[in-house]
Image: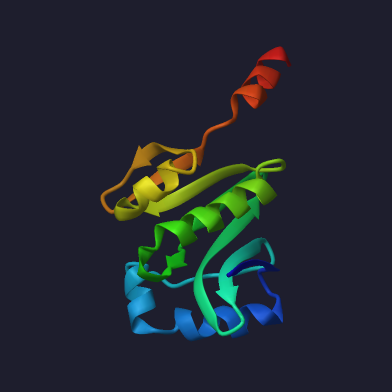
Length: 141
């Protein structure tokens, strides 16, 4: 399995995820909220040549990268971890990373360094904690 990173309007995006985001069970996974994309999005897609296992679109805006509306087949913890690790490695140097997370996925995000900053009824807002060396750097400034 590879992690493929595509910009929000890359034509290859549609061949990798369109067959999923139009399925009733995948929309249900996302609590019937539609998936969105734009030029400000980048998508992280877990796939092999014959199968897409999951995807995470990330909206980059004003120094923040926000995860919202994702899909991971069978809620596979390893796929979640690989996708989140790639997002963190790629985006954390330039962006503060936040996630709007379904309640059932809180442990997946917590295991990858996110902590809850706000609760709603069906979701939580989570933020990636800074590493200690980054926090000390901020304190020196």
